[in-house]
Image (cartoon, rainbow, N blue to C red; front, side, top):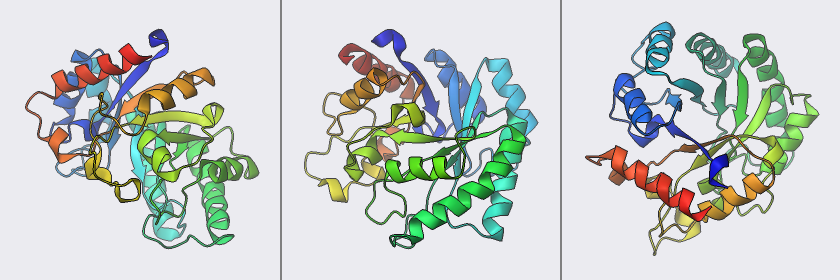
Length: 271
């Protein structure tokens, strides 16, 4: 099964690196696909670096940009969100990114039955045109946190189908959020990207797991990343597995290349 594994690197794996150093790290690991972010200070996109500069830098390094992560609160659709979506979709198109990740409201609002489904459909209907016109795919990422307005991949998949969005949208299967949500179904055919990270803290309860607990996948992983990946691949998924650790412990690593290589080797050895 290891021959089917295709890893990617989210800039959150080494957020202190400049785009040039981040692309170089990916190249050294033999990874040719990356996700760039719009939430890292002093870095593209927040520092105003033109998309063409990042596009050319990636091309020179032999790197493909698979996504921009992310349009936040996408299912709280209003004039502000529309403007953000257009700006990010333009940047994604101009930087050569294949997709834009779409993250739902995650503050306890918009959770009512009926309300949350209506909000997702309204946002996806608008985004279908914005993204479709620019040739950018939308990747809907349900979050497993109890306060999230879109926890269920089934609800996301139904909404995508209902708005006729199968040509534009797919979902992100995040192994951390899938574990937290407790939803058994995995929807490999609707999955456009997989985010991988592990939790090995033996004390924290599932309901209390947060982004700072998310490390690189290793033998102590409590999220069953290996099992989730195995099920996705068995279901026909052949896309990218993108490392997205949020733990400050990972971000402080003196040698992220070695740590990432170890995680790649561990996952490969178990599949």
